[in-house]
Image (cartoon, helix red, strand yellow):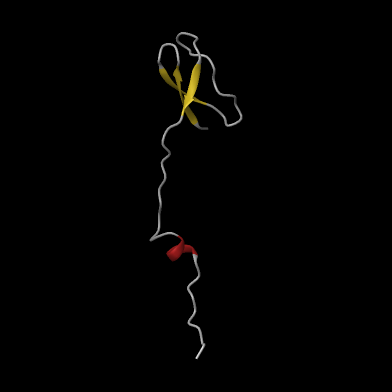
Length: 67
């Protein structure tokens, strides 16, 4: 299950909650009961392989016989 980070508009406290995808976002701060918003953070992406489309996915071209 994903972990979401929230920040309160009133007191500025940041906290995390583990929620299912189909759960509604939190709206109330657990400290001061003020309004909160969900923070967007960086996503860890790992690229593996020697390259992208040109070297990994595309079929190698065959020599043409146009002579």
